[in-house]
Image (cartoon, rainbow, N blue to C red; front, side, top):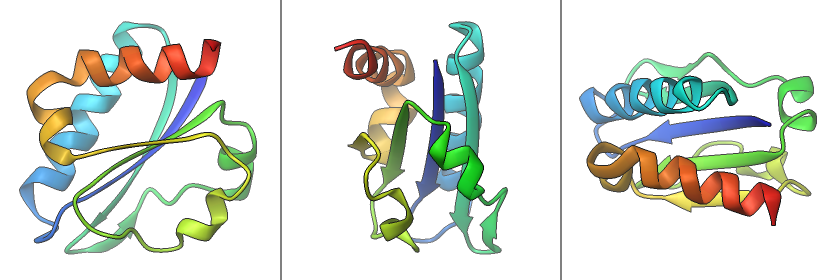
Length: 103
């Protein structure tokens, strides 16, 4: 299974990056392929490529704001959560992603 994710918070500082790291660690622990793009104060970092998106089983958007360039995910299965959900129970978020992919 492969997931691509985008994290973003209103200030784009700590929580954006904390959520990205939590998602990476939880996915790797469950042997899930993961690539995480952050949309923070420094702009878009680790930008997902067209190939990353096309090869993903699911797009996870962890954000409390509207993310930039959301239209590029049209046609993909998308799961949206808040940054707080990721920071308080990332394992549950990853479990829901797995369930959505497997049906």
